[in-house]
Amino acid sequence: MARTVAELPAGVRLTDHISLGVLTASVPRDAITEILRATERESIRQRELPAHVMVYYVIALALYADVSTREVLRCLLEGIRWLGDRSTDEGAVPPVKSAISQARARLGAAPMELLYRRVVAPIATAGTPGAWYRGWRVMSLDGTTLDVSDTVENAHVFGRPGSVRGASAFPQLRVLALLENGTHVLHGAILAPYTVAEPTLAPSVVAHLTGEMLCLADRGFYSRAFWRQALKTGAALLWRVRHDLTLPVEERYDDGSYRSRLPWNAQSADRDRGPLPVRVIEYTVPTGRNRSRYCLITSILEPARAPAEELARLYHERWEIETAFDEFKTHLKGAGRVLRSKTPDLVYQEAWGFLIAHSAIRGLMHEAALGALPRARDADTLSYTHAVRVVRRTLPRVAAIPPSGLANAGARTRGDSPRTSQRARELQSRSRRPPRSETQDE
Image 1 (tube, one colour):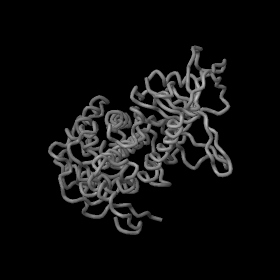
Image 2 (cartoon, helix red, strand yellow):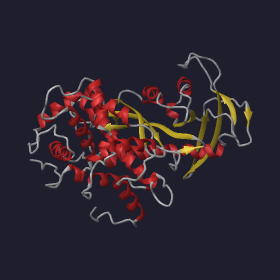
Image 3 (tube, helix red, strand yellow):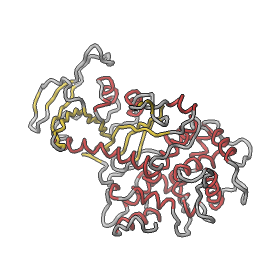
């Protein structure tokens, strides 16, 4: 049976429906040009689909995962020409799917990964609610998986998880990242086949920690060698460990925590037997008829700097990363939808596009939260689903990029934007209205 091509409403251009300004503010053309030059992907001759256009196209695919590739390109080209980019012919019919695939293959995944590294970073300012704990920027480490198209090549490269009936229906891509808890920006991400375990990838992600950060991590990441490596970044650490881990009591503190040291044995990958002092916090949490036992270790050895009760509450903020992955997988990509790319290189390319698009939307939400009156709001109180709709839906006919667009884009990254954008104001306005029925037209 023939399928109906998923299309956007006729006559609607990207500046109306995707708001290209969100992308260009977060991903400036100058940054794209530099990265294309560095990766030798810059278009040498004039093509129907120049390399810089394809970069924006990959990000637009993430914003419209349920729309046909050719339809997204049609709207993208209209929006780019409206903004004054004449690198594509006006009125030209969008290329066929095979030409789009060839253009994506020429671009490859490397420029998208470098672009992600260039433009995605923690954005919380001193006034961002929920982003800080006693001067530390709170970060969480965790991973997730994405279903990819079931092709022979994808299955060979990525692998499938097992199941009680054999193997999963789809190969899977593994994503591991640091979450900035206050803004839900996914920073320092690593992509890999499902067959590569999270602890193997974790050292590359933790390398993005800095001395101003406090990292939360679950017990699946703990090892003595990894703890030592994470300490070298200068970040404060608060990790859960197995409750049966041998941690000798060396000194008890008034807040209920105690000083200890991490054990070493012959099976440890850490060849340095030097002492690794930690502070231990143990407690239980009622879960229905049972009680869950928690054992946390932290590199913050002085109780006065971080009392045990506060750290116990803070650790449970680690679940914020599960919410961010849900935004990424369910609301942006779509529940039950697999990545559309048929080859491994394009799977990586598409996934980096999703991460950049998620960051762009989260940047908009952070801007809206900071500009809320009478005081800044926690970005968690804004609807991610609504933010995606704001980026997609029809907007008043205003300039997609203000005269100081690129300069202000940098200012927003630093958190000192002089004014709130049109899209951010709409998010603020929506957050103050009473909720509407889901059946009501957006």
